[in-house]
Length: 68
Length: 285
Image 1 (spheres, each protein chain N blue to C red):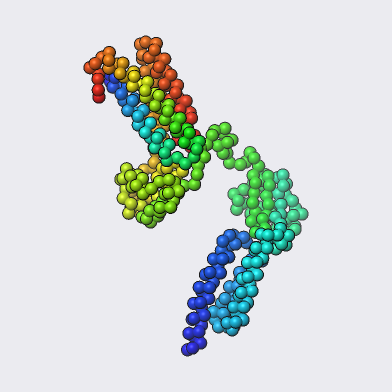
Image 2: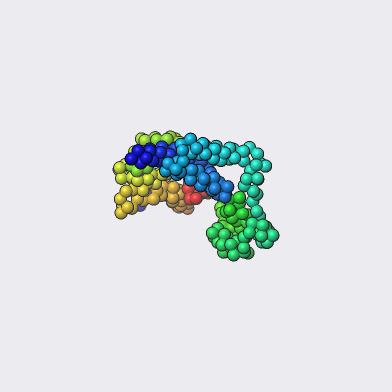
């Protein structure tokens, strides 16, 4: 697998993680559980941003890997 | 013939009256076993059967029934209001084992043999007298046991691991019917339930019992016991996905050519590792 498709696979994985975390955040009734999930969502969000910028850089350098 | 009809009428009315009386007594009283209460209830039962069988006049019968029911109830209330009355009626708890030593004089006081003490310990799953730190006989006759600290079952605190606080689960489906009140207790509604069932591929009519735990996972038991319902593993999957993302970032960090990328990816790997640690008590326990 090319490095580009690996990065995109990880990105999809992380987006799924983020949405599952948000479901649990919404469903949770306990304050500290909610706090833990929202922190995790923020962490996932920042990691996703870093990864997306990495992918954009890669696509800029090698345009044949643009898109899915 | 008239007598027979009277007996039937009396029995029916007593039946209904006893239903209400039993409900008044029911709440909590049944679990409190004491000879006094047992005799009270037996007398009330006997009076009711006598009335029912036309063996006493209506006036006499209901008068006696009224007295016994009212007095039993008032003694209950007085016990709550005054400690003196409570101790008078029920007595005090007797300590049977203290600091691991059997109190023989107390055993004599309640007329228990050593055999009976050991038998009561066994009902609490304690087979070794050496394991017991403290044992007390309650006013109801039940023996309650406190084990020595090294014999107690291990809990999460002993292992030094944090456990996520868990609330009580709510039963939301019973016998194919949706219970709306427990659903709203969890902040959910029928729409959510419908979506969950659709994702599991199960129809509502097939569900016998459906429970939602404190973090919102739905578990169902179906009428058809042959179908295996998958136990919800979403949390474990989430944890596993996080682990795989963390491993990916470690890989990218190693495989990167330039320093900037390397540090970026290893920072992300570290963030994910911290997240994993933080979420572990909630996802895995």
